[in-house]
Image (tube, rainbow, N blue to C red; front, side, top):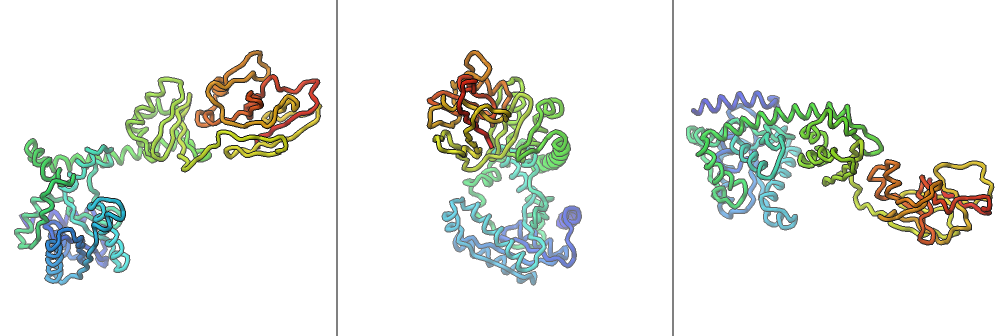
Length: 443
């Protein structure tokens, strides 16, 4: 049995890792059976290893006894030994995080420091197949995608997990057959932490249903990993075909999504913008109506228009002005990053700029107001007989929702006299009797 595990270890190591003979590996050893076995196997394999032990000071004398055991193990194996004691509870309190998260942050920070200072190529940790399965179950209970169903990866950054091929019982059997000494962390038997709850209570129940459940779930993790890679590749290819980037936003034609995307592929395309799979299904369902709709992720806004969807990044601390006052003497004002220039002209006007407003100066009542349009606002557009709502005008010109919602209007004596860049009110147009003209140009 012992030789079988060592043989499997060598096969897995050669397949999963490429480590040169001159490269050094730091091994994280807690004193438990998994990490002691890992260090023993790596040493037998002939790697240049050193031992690192974290004393988190959470179990008093028990923690000190763990450190003493690991130090003794390193001395017997003639291996370089590093140890560090941490004030874990203090660190957790100061940073407002859990004890578990504090311990994780402290140890990985220290491992990275040791690697940088001592020339270690990698740090090996003793995660095994059961740990990977527990991670998958934790991810599933929290809600996850295929990426979260892959389990623990053999290598990530500079951290390797050479025991992922083995189940816990195999490791214990190997350790016993090779007379290895280790210490049991009694806190692992407490189910107050979610991972321990899964390990101590959920897994035994699943093993009653399927004694090979660890192997079954681990096999499914391989399938999930391959499916994730395939879908990521397909989504990247499709994204290059249908997503158009312009001025900090991304646009996708709805017809392209309907013809070429499933909810899953759309999710993979929008994943970098933090939209969930449920939102992607809702986005596709929204195509059944011409009504504009907005979706929010933690980092982005997605606007569904008549013919396209637009994704743009949320602007942090964005603060839009709702109204500014314009006095008769002003020649320029700034409103929500737009500049408006004011100029008084004498008729007749020979040339007209389509984006500018030309208003009969004597009909205006100063101060004017430039404000965001409101529901119910209306005006009598130039050339029309009756009034029309601002919302209807914006819809008619097919303005995108994210632009429409903050579009300004110019007001004189509480009457809307101009929709910047589009229409002036019929009452304020220049005529034969006009003596003075106010030209307003959006810069």
